[in-house]
Image 1 (cartoon, rainbow, N blue to C red):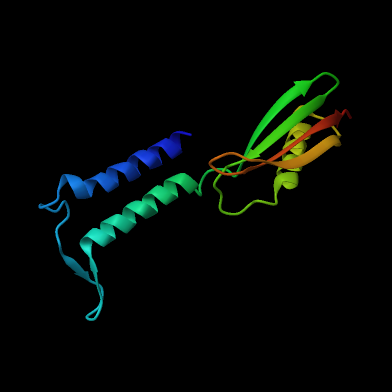
Image 2 (image 1 turned 180 degrees about the vertical axis):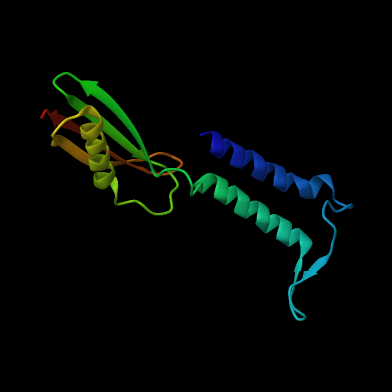
Length: 144
């Protein structure tokens, strides 16, 4: 929710720039020559650079696609809950693979032989600001 609030705040600030400085421009009215026949206005370059920076911040391609929460139950059982980031660039069909990868990590770190999936389901959590893929399940770790 913090990113959305920041985005709204920045966009509101950008729309206010035209009314705060009506006579004196905030950015010089210059053209940046790309080729002899094509140039870009400096204010357009700054505007689109800002839009690209905000989009990069919201999408955040370097962040992991899935957030995993786990709860340990008695008898070596774990409940895993996965939530995909709301705005993503790929990775929409990998819930099962991420679920199994985390189960294998629990097997290896705990010294178990294997795991069994007792329950598994995928779904979509709809919200005003967009839908979010979810997956959850219960695994049982089998001792050696």
